[in-house]
Image (cartoon, rainbow over all chains, first blue to last red; front, side, top):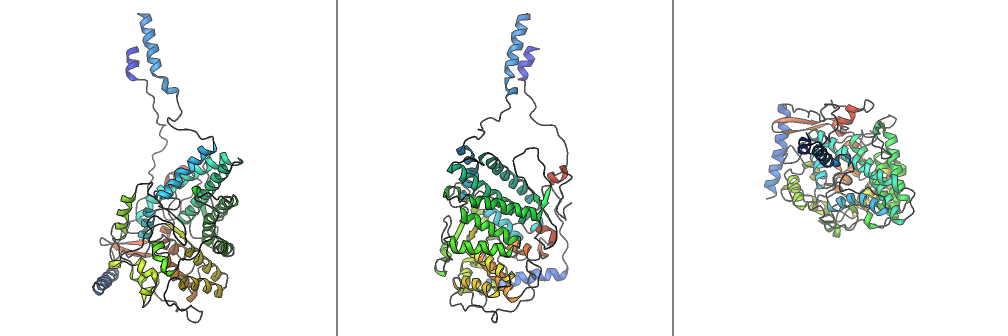
Length: 57
Length: 454
């Protein structure tokens, strides 16, 4: 028994008892499918930028 | 045999000696003024080294704020920045905890040094009050709705002293703002003048002005701004020196009142190189460029801000500059009905930025443009030509300094969307107010979460 005691090294559990299991993050909002008008706005922004690059080479 | 068993049992018991040793190993519990000073020095070193993401912020902080805002156009390219504010919901909760860890450190210092008479104790106390006040200012801007007159709004939990068992619920917004001002005034009253502790009198006054500005206390804010401009010892940088001041990698120059990253104590320069690359993965919006008018090259800010391929050219660092104080004062005068004084401040700034500029008058102010993202001012009133002019100058001046997101929030919190990888993501009104740490809300029934987060 004494040898067993020596072998275990007499460690103690440092962790406190678990009190809850709640998640700590929120689900991020999902994206939506854009309408044709909205995609056109993005296309316009990209075209304007590409035109800027052409003019400022 | 029995004796051997007893000896072996005693040896086993001796091996268990550590179980009674409950002190954290390798730490000193502060007791002297110098030991408490070291608690603050840890945070000051982070600020100077550029590693602080919380108190003043650093390039990482800035990249998150600019990623959420619209000075860079995510519809052209999202790049490696967060696409929009919704992507940062959970990060903001981690930052909320970080703020309160710093407040804890300040409370430990304040709780022990208050009443001590040495110069060192007074300086450390002043620093602790300043940092705590700045943390509360940041918490209010990030985790509370923009102030609305006549409405009782939720603030943040006020933790006045270090108490490991205390679980305060949220104060009101008004109480939180009052508490923040009280902390900053306590710091200012101690008239700390040691550069080692950074937050000297006029630097802390900048945050007092910012707090009152956010709280729409126009009269009080105007007085503090006037004091800083008249007595702070700073002058607006001229057109000739502007680029040198703004583009300084590690030096505080000219009108910069305080900045982070004045040395490389954090050894994060390699990481900041990546951040600059991330920022330059998203082009500047056309709306921003149009603010400079038909002859943009005459405005020194255009040359600094707009780099090749319409990517950011400005050194992205968190700073407080005299220009911001002048712009706050202009807006305060506007809301006080003093249009002539507002124009005086605006023109003072424009003369130092635009070559051959003609001063603006009420008659020559450009008409309000249609189609802008911001359509109302901080008080909910429709934009006027003068208010638009103040906002435009602020947007040009404080580009890439983490200001635009809070300007959008303060002036109506408009909803807008971007398309990323074929899907539309909308910055909803509720996203301008980040969630309180969910663990606190779940454990404390008295803690109310901000609207929109489930």
